[in-house]
Length: 337
Ligand code: 13P
Ligand code: SF4
Image (tube, rainbow, N blue to C red; front, top):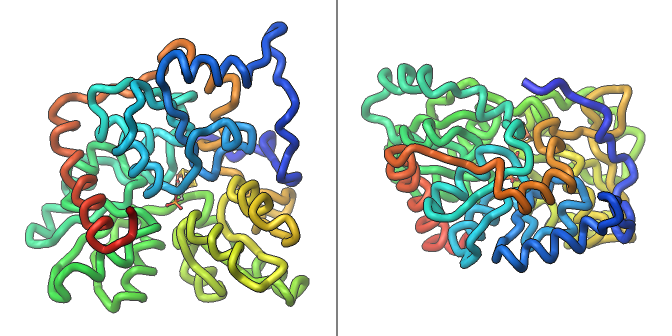
C-alpha cells in the first residue's frame, strides 16, 4: 500500500498549464503531442489525475466513460492515465493493442481489498447468487464476476435485474450498502473499501457545513453511509461534475478526490469548491495511487511503449464477458450512447 503523501497537495486548482516542463531543452508537451500522432495513440485520463495530465488527454472522464472510450477507440496504442485496474480493463477490451500505464505501481486500495483467492472462497458460500463487481477490482476478480458496474451505472444495473435475484456485490461495501438502500435489495457485500473515500470524517464535514452554511455537500458513493446521509447529491465523478454545473448553489463541499476540482473549477469559474480533507493537516484528499502518474512518466510511457499491461489469454477471455455485459446493459438502459 502506498503511504498517503502530501507532496502532490494541490490546494491551488486550475493550475496554469501553459508553462513548459523542461526535459533538456525540449518542450515535453509538444513532444507528447508529436509522439501521440506518430504512434496513433490515445491518452485516456481519469478525473483524479493531475491537471497537466487532464489537459493533454484526448478524453477525461469517470470509469464508465473511460471504459466506453477504450471499447470504441481506433488508436493502436492506449496511454492510460489512471490506475492499474483501469488500464487492465482497457487491455481486456483491446487484447491486440498496446496499453501502457505511466506508473505500474499505480494500484488501488479498493481493488487490493479483494484478493482473488479469498474472493473465490467467499463465493463458494453463495453458489446461487449473481456476482456483480465494481470495476475497481483486479482482472482475476472480473473473471469470477457475472456483471461489472461502475459508480455511474451501479444503481440502474441492479434495478434492471429481477427483484428476487440473489446478488453478491464486491468489493466496495460502501457503494454496495448505498445500492441496497436505494433499491431495497439485500445484496451480500464483500468487506472492501477505498482508503481515499472511507477516511473522510463525518465530523469534519459537519464542521465544514457549519462554517459554510450556503454550500451544498456532494459526495462519491465510495464514502461511508454517515457521510452520504449528509449529502445533497451523491454520484460518480461525472455525475458530481454535471451537478456542480447545473446547480444554483455557488459553493460546494466536495467529498471525493482532489483531482475532480480541476474540471469543476473550469466548468464553473464563478463557483467555489472546498474539498473535504483527508486529515486536519492538509486541504486536499489525493489518491496516492492516481497521483503516482506524472507528465514525465506519461511521456516516457508513450515514447518507450512501456510499462505495458499484459494478461494471460484465459483471463482476457473470461474477464471481457462481464465488462461487455455492463456496456450492453448500459446502452440498452440509455446510460451511455
Ligand atoms: P468513478 O470514476 O466511477 O467516479 O469512480 C471513482 C474512483 O474511485 C475511481 O478510482
Ligand atoms: Fe482506488 Fe480509491 Fe484511488 Fe479510486 S480513489 S483509485 S478507488 S484508492
